[in-house]
Image (cartoon, rainbow, N blue to C red; front, top):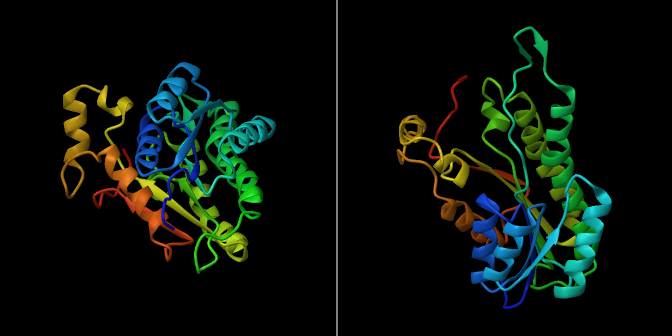
Length: 255
Protein backbone atom coordinates (compact mmCIF):
# COMPACT_ATOMS: atom_id res chain seq x y z
CA UNK A 1 0.00 0.00 0.00
CA UNK A 2 1.43 3.35 -1.00
CA UNK A 3 1.53 5.94 1.78
CA UNK A 4 -0.25 8.83 0.16
CA UNK A 5 -0.03 12.43 1.35
CA UNK A 6 -2.37 12.94 4.28
CA UNK A 7 -3.11 9.23 4.81
CA UNK A 8 -4.41 8.86 8.40
CA UNK A 9 -2.24 6.81 10.77
CA UNK A 10 -2.25 6.04 14.49
CA UNK A 11 0.80 5.10 16.57
CA UNK A 12 0.34 3.94 20.15
CA UNK A 13 3.19 4.58 22.54
CA UNK A 14 4.18 7.30 20.11
CA UNK A 15 5.48 9.76 22.69
CA UNK A 16 8.84 8.03 23.09
CA UNK A 17 11.07 5.12 22.08
CA UNK A 18 10.24 3.02 19.05
CA UNK A 19 6.78 4.55 18.80
CA UNK A 20 8.10 8.08 18.48
CA UNK A 21 10.54 7.12 15.72
CA UNK A 22 7.77 5.27 13.84
CA UNK A 23 5.43 8.25 14.15
CA UNK A 24 8.07 10.60 12.77
CA UNK A 25 8.92 8.21 9.92
CA UNK A 26 5.28 7.83 8.89
CA UNK A 27 4.82 11.60 8.96
CA UNK A 28 7.94 12.07 6.84
CA UNK A 29 6.46 9.60 4.33
CA UNK A 30 3.32 11.73 4.08
CA UNK A 31 0.95 10.23 6.66
CA UNK A 32 -1.14 12.33 9.02
CA UNK A 33 -0.30 10.82 12.39
CA UNK A 34 -2.25 10.68 15.64
CA UNK A 35 -0.07 9.81 18.63
CA UNK A 36 -1.74 7.78 21.39
CA UNK A 37 0.05 7.85 24.74
CA UNK A 38 -0.41 8.72 28.41
CA UNK A 39 2.51 11.16 28.59
CA UNK A 40 0.87 14.46 27.69
CA UNK A 41 4.01 16.60 27.69
CA UNK A 42 6.05 14.27 25.48
CA UNK A 43 3.04 13.39 23.33
CA UNK A 44 2.26 17.03 22.58
CA UNK A 45 5.92 17.67 21.71
CA UNK A 46 6.03 14.75 19.25
CA UNK A 47 2.71 15.77 17.69
CA UNK A 48 4.06 19.26 17.08
CA UNK A 49 7.21 17.84 15.44
CA UNK A 50 5.21 15.76 13.00
CA UNK A 51 2.40 18.27 12.47
CA UNK A 52 -0.12 15.72 13.70
CA UNK A 53 -2.18 15.35 16.85
CA UNK A 54 -1.85 13.89 20.32
CA UNK A 55 -4.56 11.93 22.13
CA UNK A 56 -4.16 10.95 25.76
CA UNK A 57 -5.17 7.30 25.57
CA UNK A 58 -4.90 4.39 27.98
CA UNK A 59 -4.74 1.48 25.57
CA UNK A 60 -5.79 -0.94 28.33
CA UNK A 61 -9.09 0.91 28.71
CA UNK A 62 -11.65 0.25 25.96
CA UNK A 63 -13.52 3.51 26.49
CA UNK A 64 -10.31 5.56 26.42
CA UNK A 65 -9.40 3.91 23.12
CA UNK A 66 -12.88 4.56 21.71
CA UNK A 67 -12.64 8.26 22.58
CA UNK A 68 -9.14 8.53 21.13
CA UNK A 69 -10.10 6.82 17.89
CA UNK A 70 -13.12 9.09 17.52
CA UNK A 71 -10.96 12.20 18.02
CA UNK A 72 -8.43 10.96 15.46
CA UNK A 73 -11.22 10.11 13.00
CA UNK A 74 -12.81 13.54 13.33
CA UNK A 75 -9.45 15.27 12.82
CA UNK A 76 -7.84 13.10 10.12
CA UNK A 77 -10.45 10.65 8.83
CA UNK A 78 -10.45 6.86 9.08
CA UNK A 79 -7.00 5.47 9.89
CA UNK A 80 -5.40 3.29 7.20
CA UNK A 81 -2.29 2.56 9.27
CA UNK A 82 -2.20 1.34 12.87
CA UNK A 83 1.12 0.71 14.61
CA UNK A 84 0.91 -0.59 18.18
CA UNK A 85 4.07 0.23 20.14
CA UNK A 86 2.63 0.93 23.59
CA UNK A 87 3.96 -1.46 26.21
CA UNK A 88 5.76 -2.03 29.49
CA UNK A 89 8.53 -4.48 30.44
CA UNK A 90 8.65 -5.12 34.20
CA UNK A 91 11.27 -7.49 35.60
CA UNK A 92 10.02 -10.08 38.08
CA UNK A 93 10.45 -13.83 38.52
CA UNK A 94 7.69 -16.39 39.00
CA UNK A 95 9.06 -16.75 42.54
CA UNK A 96 11.55 -14.34 44.10
CA UNK A 97 12.94 -14.66 47.61
CA UNK A 98 10.19 -17.11 48.40
CA UNK A 99 7.43 -14.76 47.26
CA UNK A 100 5.11 -15.39 44.32
CA UNK A 101 5.04 -12.96 41.38
CA UNK A 102 2.79 -9.99 42.10
CA UNK A 103 -0.44 -10.96 40.31
CA UNK A 104 -1.43 -7.32 39.83
CA UNK A 105 1.86 -6.58 38.04
CA UNK A 106 1.33 -9.61 35.79
CA UNK A 107 -2.23 -8.52 35.06
CA UNK A 108 -1.14 -4.95 34.33
CA UNK A 109 1.52 -6.15 31.89
CA UNK A 110 -0.95 -8.33 30.01
CA UNK A 111 -3.56 -5.55 30.09
CA UNK A 112 -1.25 -3.02 28.42
CA UNK A 113 0.83 -5.22 26.12
CA UNK A 114 -1.80 -7.71 25.00
CA UNK A 115 -5.25 -6.31 25.61
CA UNK A 116 -4.06 -2.81 24.71
CA UNK A 117 -2.76 -4.05 21.36
CA UNK A 118 -5.92 -6.03 20.66
CA UNK A 119 -8.17 -3.23 21.83
CA UNK A 120 -6.70 -0.62 19.48
CA UNK A 121 -6.40 -3.07 16.59
CA UNK A 122 -9.94 -4.41 16.82
CA UNK A 123 -11.66 -1.06 17.34
CA UNK A 124 -9.63 0.60 14.59
CA UNK A 125 -10.31 -2.31 12.23
CA UNK A 126 -14.06 -1.85 12.66
CA UNK A 127 -13.77 1.62 11.10
CA UNK A 128 -11.06 0.64 8.62
CA UNK A 129 -13.27 -2.12 7.20
CA UNK A 130 -15.78 0.50 6.06
CA UNK A 131 -13.28 2.56 4.08
CA UNK A 132 -12.94 2.35 0.32
CA UNK A 133 -10.14 0.11 -1.02
CA UNK A 134 -6.98 1.93 -2.08
CA UNK A 135 -5.63 -0.45 -4.72
CA UNK A 136 -6.49 -3.30 -7.10
CA UNK A 137 -5.96 -5.87 -4.33
CA UNK A 138 -8.86 -4.36 -2.43
CA UNK A 139 -6.57 -3.29 0.40
CA UNK A 140 -8.05 -0.97 3.00
CA UNK A 141 -5.33 -0.76 5.62
CA UNK A 142 -2.49 -2.30 7.61
CA UNK A 143 -2.17 -3.13 11.31
CA UNK A 144 1.34 -3.61 12.69
CA UNK A 145 1.75 -4.93 16.22
CA UNK A 146 4.91 -5.02 18.32
CA UNK A 147 5.82 -8.34 19.91
CA UNK A 148 9.37 -9.08 21.11
CA UNK A 149 12.04 -11.75 20.86
CA UNK A 150 11.00 -12.43 24.46
CA UNK A 151 7.89 -14.02 22.97
CA UNK A 152 10.17 -16.89 21.92
CA UNK A 153 13.35 -16.44 23.99
CA UNK A 154 11.93 -15.18 27.28
CA UNK A 155 14.65 -14.68 29.87
CA UNK A 156 14.73 -15.07 33.64
CA UNK A 157 12.52 -12.37 35.13
CA UNK A 158 10.49 -11.86 31.94
CA UNK A 159 7.56 -14.14 32.74
CA UNK A 160 4.86 -11.46 32.46
CA UNK A 161 6.48 -9.65 29.55
CA UNK A 162 7.17 -12.85 27.60
CA UNK A 163 3.64 -14.12 28.18
CA UNK A 164 2.09 -10.88 26.94
CA UNK A 165 4.34 -10.61 23.89
CA UNK A 166 3.95 -14.31 23.11
CA UNK A 167 0.22 -13.75 22.96
CA UNK A 168 0.68 -10.77 20.62
CA UNK A 169 2.72 -13.02 18.34
CA UNK A 170 0.09 -15.78 18.49
CA UNK A 171 -2.65 -13.27 17.70
CA UNK A 172 -1.05 -12.25 14.40
CA UNK A 173 -2.22 -15.03 12.09
CA UNK A 174 -5.81 -15.38 13.35
CA UNK A 175 -6.25 -11.60 13.25
CA UNK A 176 -4.93 -11.54 9.67
CA UNK A 177 -7.33 -14.34 8.76
CA UNK A 178 -10.24 -12.60 10.50
CA UNK A 179 -9.62 -9.40 8.54
CA UNK A 180 -8.60 -10.90 5.19
CA UNK A 181 -12.04 -10.47 3.65
CA UNK A 182 -11.99 -6.83 4.77
CA UNK A 183 -8.76 -6.11 2.87
CA UNK A 184 -6.77 -5.46 6.07
CA UNK A 185 -3.29 -6.92 6.54
CA UNK A 186 -1.81 -7.73 9.96
CA UNK A 187 1.89 -8.18 10.67
CA UNK A 188 3.84 -8.28 13.94
CA UNK A 189 7.45 -7.30 14.56
CA UNK A 190 9.55 -9.01 17.23
CA UNK A 191 12.40 -6.60 17.95
CA UNK A 192 15.57 -7.67 19.74
CA UNK A 193 17.74 -5.29 21.75
CA UNK A 194 17.37 -1.75 20.45
CA UNK A 195 19.07 1.49 21.42
CA UNK A 196 15.92 3.05 22.81
CA UNK A 197 16.26 5.96 25.26
CA UNK A 198 15.86 3.50 28.14
CA UNK A 199 18.68 1.22 26.94
CA UNK A 200 20.86 4.16 25.90
CA UNK A 201 20.69 5.42 29.48
CA UNK A 202 22.48 2.27 30.70
CA UNK A 203 26.22 2.55 31.45
CA UNK A 204 28.33 2.04 28.34
CA UNK A 205 29.74 -1.18 29.79
CA UNK A 206 26.22 -2.60 30.03
CA UNK A 207 25.41 -1.56 26.47
CA UNK A 208 28.64 -3.12 25.22
CA UNK A 209 27.80 -6.35 27.06
CA UNK A 210 24.36 -6.47 25.43
CA UNK A 211 25.83 -5.83 21.98
CA UNK A 212 28.46 -8.55 22.45
CA UNK A 213 25.78 -11.22 22.42
CA UNK A 214 24.39 -10.18 19.04
CA UNK A 215 25.87 -12.26 16.15
CA UNK A 216 25.76 -9.64 13.39
CA UNK A 217 25.83 -6.76 13.20
CA UNK A 218 27.45 -6.75 16.62
CA UNK A 219 25.62 -3.72 17.95
CA UNK A 220 22.27 -2.68 19.32
CA UNK A 221 19.48 -2.18 16.84
CA UNK A 222 18.85 1.35 15.63
CA UNK A 223 15.35 2.69 16.20
CA UNK A 224 15.46 3.92 12.61
CA UNK A 225 15.78 0.28 11.48
CA UNK A 226 12.57 -0.60 13.28
CA UNK A 227 10.81 2.32 11.57
CA UNK A 228 12.22 1.27 8.19
CA UNK A 229 10.69 -2.19 8.64
CA UNK A 230 7.34 -0.63 9.51
CA UNK A 231 7.44 1.39 6.30
CA UNK A 232 8.39 -1.68 4.26
CA UNK A 233 5.54 -3.72 5.73
CA UNK A 234 3.11 -0.98 4.72
CA UNK A 235 4.48 -0.83 1.18
CA UNK A 236 4.86 -4.59 0.61
CA UNK A 237 1.32 -5.80 0.00
CA UNK A 238 2.20 -9.51 0.19
CA UNK A 239 3.36 -9.38 3.79
CA UNK A 240 0.49 -10.64 5.91
CA UNK A 241 -0.09 -12.83 8.95
CA UNK A 242 3.63 -12.94 9.72
CA UNK A 243 5.83 -12.43 12.79
CA UNK A 244 9.13 -10.85 11.73
CA UNK A 245 12.14 -11.02 14.05
CA UNK A 246 14.33 -7.94 13.82
CA UNK A 247 17.25 -8.86 16.05
CA UNK A 248 20.63 -9.33 14.33
CA UNK A 249 20.19 -13.12 14.70
CA UNK A 250 20.33 -12.94 18.49
CA UNK A 251 18.85 -15.79 20.50
CA UNK A 252 18.50 -14.68 24.09
CA UNK A 253 20.25 -16.71 26.78
CA UNK A 254 18.37 -17.57 30.00
CA UNK A 255 20.01 -14.56 31.72
